Image 1 (cartoon, rainbow, N blue to C red):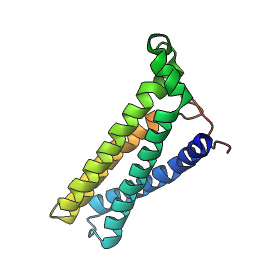
Image 2 (image 1 turned 135 degrees about the horizontal axis):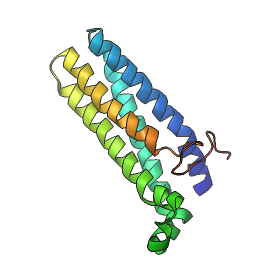
Image 3 (image 1 turned 30 degrees about the vertical axis):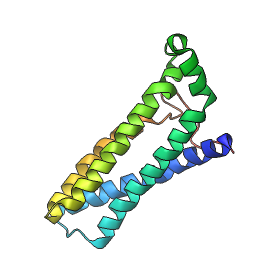
Image 4 (image 1 turned 90 degrees about the horizontal axis):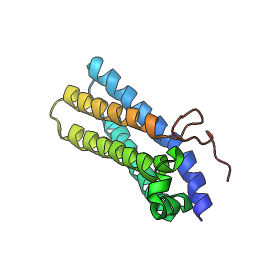
Length: 154
């Protein structure tokens, strides 16, 4: 089950990124183009937040069942000196939690704004901050912190 969840978590990141990029694009074009905030924009905001929350819950499940994290916790002083263990044991989960927290703030705050421009602006700023954090926290193949392939085999 762990390997299936790991595969799904790796594949699902692309859905998180695509939805977040699209929501941010819609936010930017709505904010600077002074568009009306439509039902479609609201759905995109909501779906993006939901996808991000699902991904975070999968990540938490993996985190608390991971052999890498078990080693990290059991051998903290040694493991924290190795960048890959430190990344997965502390950095990745912390940054991703903060990113989803920002998405949640942006989603909740934007739907409560009165004007269309304020809705777009709020969503865009919070989603962009989350997107930047996520780009740093993903273990890309080129990352100096820890790296994994773009697509993990099942």
